Length: 542
Image (tube, rainbow, N blue to C red; front, top):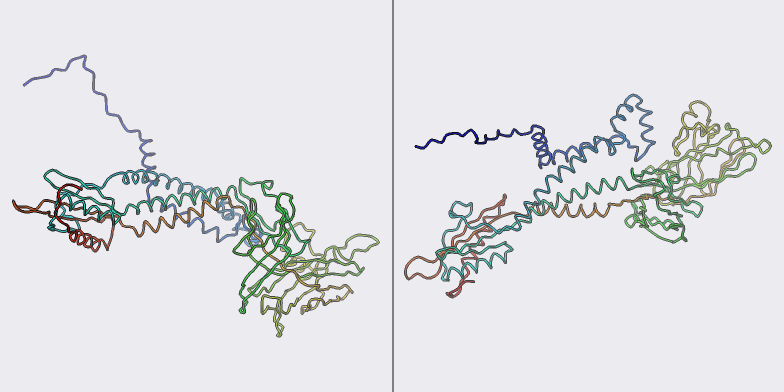
């Protein structure tokens, strides 16, 4: 026995390194964040976080509804406003879930992509020694051909069935055929996740650099508008968009055609507009609901239609004013409500001063097709029997108060306070096109006619192509991951036993990599077709 003595000059063994607790926590947190389970949880949280956006009014959609909610709930509204309930999609907590989901998907998909590429480059593994332990197994079947020829026939059969095939020659005259199919399942899974990432990127950049606005456009050459924020009824600009970034586009609607089915359902809408881009000449273009107007930097969608009564008011001094006011449809038959206000009337020409107590407003309902029973509901959306029901008010309309109100109703506070008085009696006055209504003070209101109104949505979505491609690829990937099944099959070909034996013996085994109820039938069909292959005995290798 030899004893090794420690020498004083021998270096001491280094102490074991202790793991850094901070790095360990970060490593574990990253693993948890990039797991598929966490990605699914974050996706569910994102869907839940979007619910308040449909429950509470959003400032980016309609600021008037938010102001109305504050008026109705003065105690609750400030509290939920601090939580971001009126700006859900721009709130910090929604952005945090969004970014965490994006990070989780990236960290989850990239390693799987690396593993998938490695699997695509790797040949199918060789046949196991004990194929009888596989879920599907076929015992030896004799064939009157050389093992090399039989193995080559089986390999060609599997390739025709779109299997990735590898033919191997082993010592002792043994041949194996390894085949694999169904890697498109993993490809589809990865495609779905990358498509989801593309959609997330599209939503984010579309929110930053996109914008949209709405405008009610009345038919007529004097009713046009240009693409500026001051001429929109409502608008929303992305955080990276300024009013100066909007394209220079001007519109005038020259014609509007609408057809309806016998039931009153819309059949077709078509708007014809004169469009000027970047100060150029007007160009006549037509577009419909399903065929929007595509311009340089904007898309114009036709999302609705209605009517605008044309009313001419003659005040006590004989001064006339004509207004074309869109009425808001309230049902599918285009029963419409609206208000016509004349604040600058009954001005004494001697003093040239306006008396707010002599302002006039009309509130009523317009029926494109009025019934014979006097009902205030339209019978059909086309103008077959147009009727206008109006009530007249005189007094201070409240337009100088400074608080914005609805353009489709008179100020109820002014009516309740006695500053605006109803002068038309309890029943509304009925007017048809061309008729005139004389009020108690001698002023007159003439119902000249109506014009068509189109509701236009002007928007710019810089990432809509990316989101469309992502949605299509995501659907394709989902179909592949759901319906493609991974499976492997092996064939072992041995020379027949015996001194005078000629031919080969074929053994087969199969392994489904995922749950595949039909794999047993597929495996049985493969083995039967392989056993049916028969040809003359040939020597040599394929």
